[in-house]
Length: 128
Image 1 (cartoon, rainbow, N blue to C red):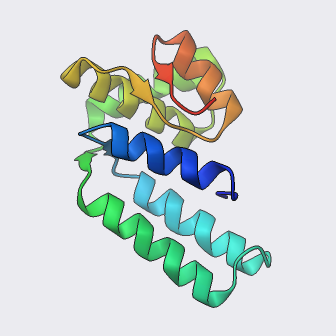
Image 2: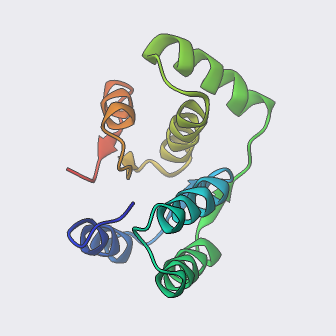
């Protein structure tokens, strides 16, 4: 979950980049992570609502990448080659698709293992 030092870094990255692309599954993952943080006592009900509203604002202005059979085939290969969990492989495949479409290889992720795989695939991790 976003900490006090992480959230400002992400906001700065979002402001700096004109286009933000995300896998369609990111909405599910964000909702699950925010709810898990509330259940674990890291967020109050009010702060959960505020975090979700901020996410929805970012989401509403993002380019959402559909998860289709071609993307899933790429994710399947990445899961095998990089030892990734299923949703992480889909996120990375989406990042690679976005980089190919835009020519901008930036990748934002809070998961160290996924960042290592992203860099190995040629993406530039913007969260260091």
